[in-house]
Amino acid sequence: MAAHPDEAEALTNLFTVVKRDGDRLVPVWYSDAYAEWLVPAADKLRAAAALTSNESLKAFLIARADAFQSNDYYASDKAWMDLDSRVEVTVGPYETYEDELLGLKASFECFVTVSDPDASARLSGYKALLPAMEQNLPVPDEVKTVRGAESPIRVVDLVYTSGDARKSVQTIAFNLPNDERVRKEKGAKKVMLRNLIETKFDRILRPIAHEILAESQQGELSAEAFFNETLFHELSHSLGPAFTTKGGEQVEVRLALQASYSPLEEAKADVMGAYNILFMIDGGHFPKDFRKKLLVSYFIGLFRSVRFGVAEAHGKGAALQINRFLEEGAATLDPTTGKFTVDEAKLEQSIAKLVHDIVMIQHAGDKAAADALLAKYGDVSAPMAAALSKVAHVPVDIRPIYPLAE
Image (cartoon, rainbow, N blue to C red; front, side):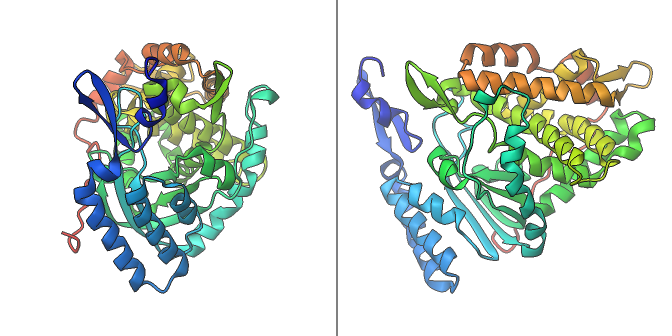
């Protein structure tokens, strides 16, 4: 790219494949590289649009079909943000987790869900509090930012996934689109996959806690805390720095931190989610006795994520948090019982400190600092390994089956 600056934009685009042509690197648009699939997919989206009477769904499906062939997803991302339909469809190239070189190339995925308007409306008040959450971050005022405030929240039940969404780790929520232009204008939509959240709590998190959480704190494990930590994780993706300055130019933090961006961003969303719920408790949005439930459920919940492996963004981000908290005495492992006890006061302090450290790294776009933080803490330590050995019988994840679609 240094030798061919005129080609840098196309080479780094989210929607190009980079191929070798002799001694050159050549960008190929997804619409051309994947025409075999995208042309019929676009036809099917237009056919679906003709079948729905919901105007917002029709507009999104047509706009996304056009994007499959133009490689310009801006208009269809905005149409997706405006979607107001019981059938909520998310389809396109979004996440960059698969690109372990620079975190630049988006993978295609699809979610088909049925929304619950009443449950969504109950949570919608939190989006109005995003500016207050930003101002409450434990960083200097000049680091705080303002993004689009629409940020709708949807509570949905999942009925179908494909592509990147159906790989080994099943997401329980997502926060899209990733285009910072759209986020600046409209924020980002937080979609909570309720049936997956409930299933993972019952089948995975509760059995993990039974094995590695001190008996005295077992009663604090809370499905409500798990749901809200998931919600505020997604809300927190819309907080903190989106852009940084490099060489006198404004660039996305994602581009500045390259492959270290995803694990650091997932750690940020986790720990900032807990930090923001504590802020909500202080503001009377949750009862005071929710504090212990949140802190215990958040800490133990990190062990669910780290079992995905530290090569995966969420797993590495979870390891970073666990190891920092153990180092600072926010939780301790009893060698006799093999169970953790959470020190609630210390954990609150550690949460605020880690939020500060990650946000400042992102603000500076400091890849070396991000690499160093992940290298020091983003691996399986001895206490973690001891705990994980006790839960080998617990499923790492669930695998949804869609009988009608198959």
